[in-house]
Length: 424
Ligand code: NIG
Ligand code: FE
Image (cartoon, rainbow, N blue to C red; front, side, top):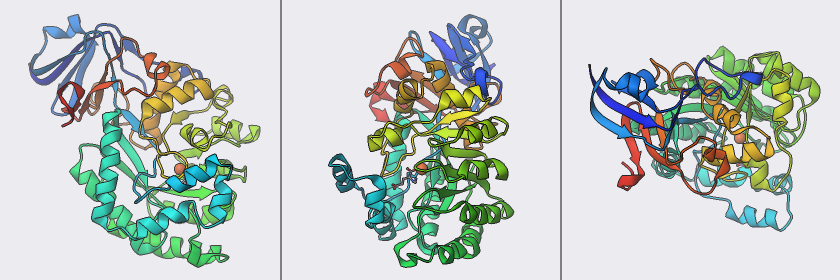
C-alpha cells in the first residue's frame, strides 16, 4: 500500500496507549524498540517494529529516526498565550521582594496586561500570539489550549476570541479556545465585583457564544477562583451559565489560597481543575473519586520563585488524574516549552520521567478535551508525532534548556525540521 510518510527505526517509540492514565497507570508508555509509524492522509494507520511494518508499505516520504525517540506531539492544556506587551518591570520588582498579590493589588498584574491588550488590534494580537505558537511548535507542542481574559470588557474579549479563531485557521497547530472573562475584576468595576460578574454572565458569555469559532475540539469557560480574584459563589454563577450555553468547564483552583475552588470543580463535573497547589487532603481525595483532571503548572511557582508545587504523588495515591501544562502568560510563567515543564515536574512534583511524559501528552490531551483525537500514537488518531534528538525518552526530563525536538509532524505534515533551518 502507498502511504504518505513512514517514520522508522526509532530507538524508542512511545505510543501512550489506552486512554487517560489514572493513578498508578500514569506512565504507561507502550514503548516499542526499533519503532515505526505509518502515516497516511493525516492519520496514523499502523504502529509496530520497523521490521514488522517495513514490507507492508510503500512510503512517499520517510523519516529515519535511528538513535532517536518518537512520541506523540505535546498537548499544552493551559495557557494564556493571547496577550499584548510584557511585564518585565514586574519581574524585576518580584526579584527585589514584591509579591504577585501585592503587585496585583497596586494595579499591576493582570490589569497591566489588560491595558496593553485592550490597546491592541486583532491583527497585533494575531502577530504577537503567532510568534509564541511557533516557538511552542518548535518545542513540540502541536495542540494548545489558549484562554482569553486580558480583555475584560466585551469588545476586547471578543477581539482575543477573534485572534484565536484566525490563528486556528492559519495553523498548523490546533487551538482549544477558553473564555476567561472572569480572570480579574477590571479597575472600572473595583468594589463592584458582582456587577462585573453580571456582565460576564449576561453579556460576554452569550456574545462569545454568538461570535463562535471554527475549532477542532470543544470550547471551554474558565474562572480564576482565588484570593484576590473571584469567589466560589461567583465562579459557580459564571460556570453554570457557561454550561447552559454549551461550554466545557475549567477552574483556576488553589493557586494562592484554598477557597473551595477544587470542590466546586468536582461538583460541576469540570473537565479540569488547574494549579491545585494549596489543595486540602479532602479535596485531593474528592478529585480521586472524580473524572476531573488536575492540571499542574510547575512553571508558575518556579516563575514566581516559590517553593509550593502540586502535591502530585498524593493526588496519584488518591486515585487521581494528572496532566501538565505551561500556564504560558506574561505575569507568572512565560514558558513555551512542555519539555521544560517535564523537567520541573520530575524534580518538584517527584514524577518519574515516564509519568511526566504521559501527563504532558495523553492526559494533557484529555484535559484539553481532545483525547479522542490526539495525545497518543495509536491507529486512527491524527498524526501529530515528534522525533526527538535523544536516544532514551528519560532525557526529556533529565536535560533542560536545550531544545531536543528535531522534527514535528502535524496532521501528517512535517512542519518543523531543525536539520533544515527551523519552522517550515
Ligand atoms: O494562571 N492565575 C491567574 N492567571 C495566571 C496569571 C496571569 C497573569 O499574571 O497575567 C496564572 O498564573
Ligand atoms: Fe493560568
